[in-house]
Amino acid sequence: MVFSKIKARLLLMTILVCLLSALLNFCFLLNHEAQIENARDTWLSADTSGTIWLESDRQQESHVSHHAPLHWMHCLYCGINLIVMVLGICGAFWMYRWKKGSRSETQPAATLSENGLDQIVRSLYLAVEMKDSYTAGHTERVAQYALAIYDQMDESQKRMLPRNDLRYAGLLHDIGKVAIPDHILQKEGKLTPEEYEIVKLHPTTGADMVEQIESLAHISRGIRYHHERWDGRGYPHQLKGEQIPLMGRILAVADTFDAMISTRSYRQAVSAKAAYKEVLRCSHTQFDPQIVECFKKAYEKGALQMKKPHSE
Image (tube, rainbow, N blue to C red; front, side, top):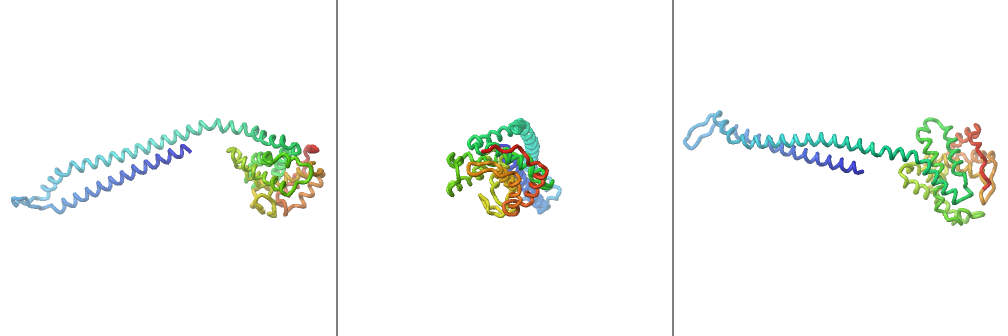
């Protein structure tokens, strides 16, 4: 930001100097043309004694009388143009050195951020699991299921979504639950409609939290929309079809599958086979049919046969 402001000011200063140079050049040319015109009109003139001056005599006098101001303006014009040229060269060189120095100074920080990103993400999702024991291991399994689905996708779809972004989004998809009161999050039995509305805020809360982390802000869309439905009946914004970001569509399948095979305080788990059939049944309604096809391939290859979730 600082570099951009300085660069803008330097550019503005250069433009102003160029305009000043152009104005002086224009004035110089006008003055020069006026003098030429005056000399042309007075090739022959009479003095007080009636003597007729020849053109050569008049030009010589004109040269003597106007040489000094013309020479002064010409030198000023050349000097201004020289200053503009020097400023341009110095400014370009200075900006190059500044930009190069800025990159070299920020590169170690970027490397450090990349190396520590896994630890940051792990710390965040563990905070949720410590708050809600019923979801212990849930975030890691959702991330693994999401990646298993991702691996069955076409290369054209993969180019739209880096694999590591999906993994981070899977690990943080429920981070917004840290803002849900414990008596609601750990409630035994069915939630009231009012309590359910509070729970439904967690995708938005989580996305808003992740957006505050510069290195992770770009994955917030997956977190915000992982409870949207293909038919437009999900939340928080009732997006429909491909309006839902690809990351959110993948996480919706992975999250629902793990939720069904995990025991919660308000219901018992179902078998992986039953959960698999339910996901297939909800294709075109709750889930993107293309993502469901990738889920089906991953399941049939055994990529979703992971360690059985704890009875929670």
